[in-house]
Image (cartoon, rainbow, N blue to C red; front, side, top):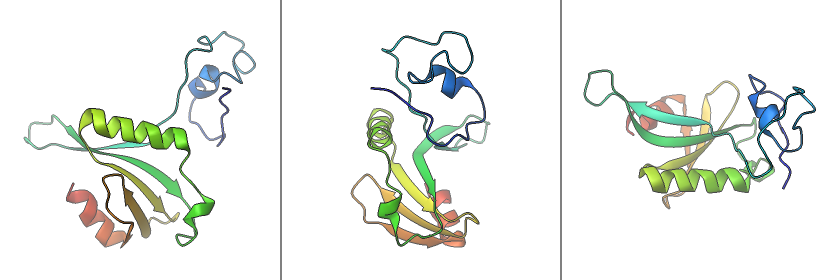
Length: 133
């Protein structure tokens, strides 16, 4: 199963070096063998619950930017990312959310993979949601 760099916006060359389809063509140095697959994840929301600077993970969040929060089917979560989020959620016992947002981060639609319905937030409401995790 070939992996491709879909966005072309990665901040470093590791992604292209590691991916099967681009192996060797980009960096000129061999990458890992074809048994190695990778899928980038987005964000781990963390909290310092003890006040001593040691954070704990409270949620895993996959984000998708779109200007039309009413047409989410046009921007689906890739199945591999969905499986990754579900697996991380189960292994770490934390919630997994998919968050669609506009570029200005003033509107949000949130899907929980723990059975809750889609929720829509403005910026203030989303901040309250995050702070409540």
